[in-house]
Image 1 (tube, one colour):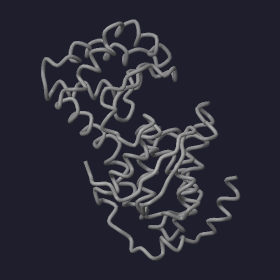
Image 2: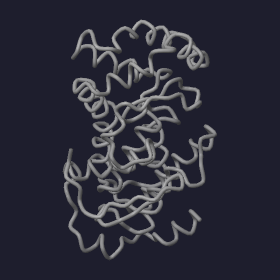
Image 3: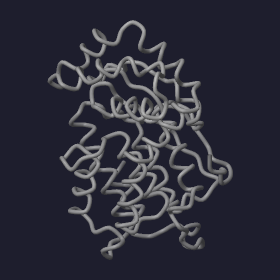
Length: 269
């Protein structure tokens, strides 16, 4: 299928893309679209504002996963989020768990999932859901999302000269694979794609290059054992196949068997 897609792309933009002038990818409308696309993969809804209180162990070896982008007790970003929240709102319901989250992160990676339950159960999930109603916790989640995931994705998208779809792909990879330059992280996946094909800023064809980014992240997902046939990579494959590099509504996509649609440019939130 993917070989067929690359053949269909053929280095050509769709008529819709050619007819639309390239917009500023820093436009908040493009951010909102990207947030909605990733939210459908993370929380099965385009309304990312409903996910502040999400918390569960999805049995992926990373302990508890929670919030807008799936902060994990076993990877360190949840600790950073709770620290940021506590700096903004001392005495919040999650501040009491900072010592336990630090202890989890001091342990070997393989021990962190079990420690997450031993040290945080039984009250942590309920306290997380309670904190989700606090505007300070909602702000902390948005600010940490932007600092750790959105900001680096936007910076690299500008560097590579990709458009709104490229930015949405970068953001999703950033969220799913995390920051860093190793082969399995955001920086390593982009490095692999840049090695395979030049990005637009270096004279490469945008569709071909973005297809290489998707392929590089699929390779990592398969190595992790997390690849699903109709998983989050299909969001970007379908938009690439349609040639919608500018994310011009209306368009639809499917992920994990669910179908979603953006009928018009959504207002930023």
